[in-house]
Length: 336
Image (cartoon, rainbow, N blue to C red; front, side):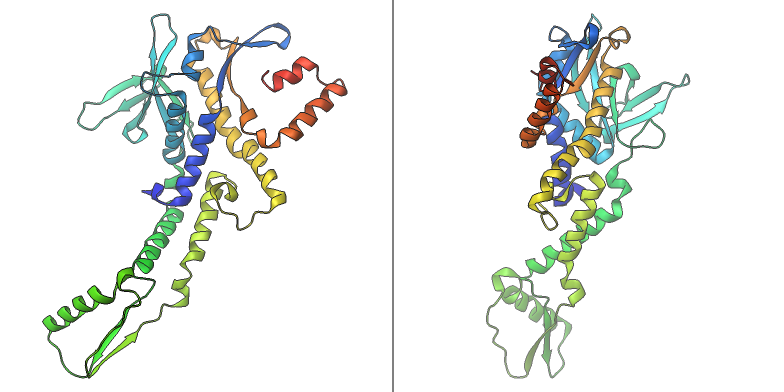
């Protein structure tokens, strides 16, 4: 339900799409700090092309990020081949998952699909990416932790829909000097609303018989300011997700000079923590123990910072000219 709030939708969509669009490359370490892309490893194709027969890599990462941003946890079912390598990854619904501790301490994942018997998975069968949490096992749902903020936003949205659904006109009172039966009152109310309520009747002319008077009811100023509460909600939700407001189309406090800095700050603070989370989860859950010394996964962030390519190029050029970087090292930073 919280995704019906535009600010929540925008934040979740932004984080999910930004992480999903970045290539996640598997590297093999070489001597003297050198590395190469491990294109010959089966996991390379799973991370970069088709993680399963039905989804692209973008689909899978985007889905997992939506789960992380709403439920605080993402669960991917790992299908291993006979050689002990990852063959497929499938997303599992976080709202159908329960995590328990086995007697020996290892986590057990109980997955209950509606209408089916519960399936129990061991730790080696699940890639579990966690958001911020308390026990290191389960991440907290940001929406559940901030449900009051979301509720205020949804209430303001419903209030606004009601006001503008009625033509932004709060209503009024029909006065008559006399006594009416309950049935007559109901018929009059129904007839009046049919002709004059809502956008289709807004601004229409009312013709009243002798003895009748219409008195409009004004909207209290504090209720008319619901737009201000919506702006407050946008800022609060952006703060919850660590997203600069201008990236979800809130330009009320943005200037030409600070938008560029805010975008870089988004990469360094908001996005980078998710990228590191993914990279370390790949190492822990998708690589064999003897591979973890020589293989590692890393996102290519050049696409996320291409807006500041001039500054990035100038920094690399300065590094080469001062001898801090070699040409090859500078090229590797650009993933060339």
